Length: 81
Image (cartoon, rainbow, N blue to C red; front, side, top):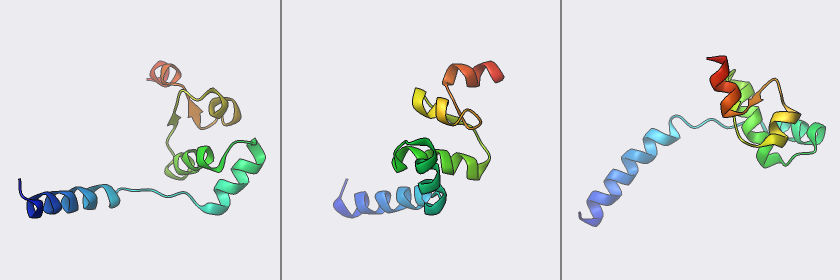
């Protein structure tokens, strides 16, 4: 594969990913972090899940305890199906 081909494929792949990227609201993320005592990094995932109206499936027990309305373990999620 040539460099030009690789750059073209990379550009095509990046477009697919970036068109579907979801970013949480900074204010919401910081409020969630303050409320929970968790990192803003962790709360970004919660904010995006809440914004999309979907569960956050995670093995992070702290997230599940802090946000039981949003974060569920994979086992809990499968039990809901």
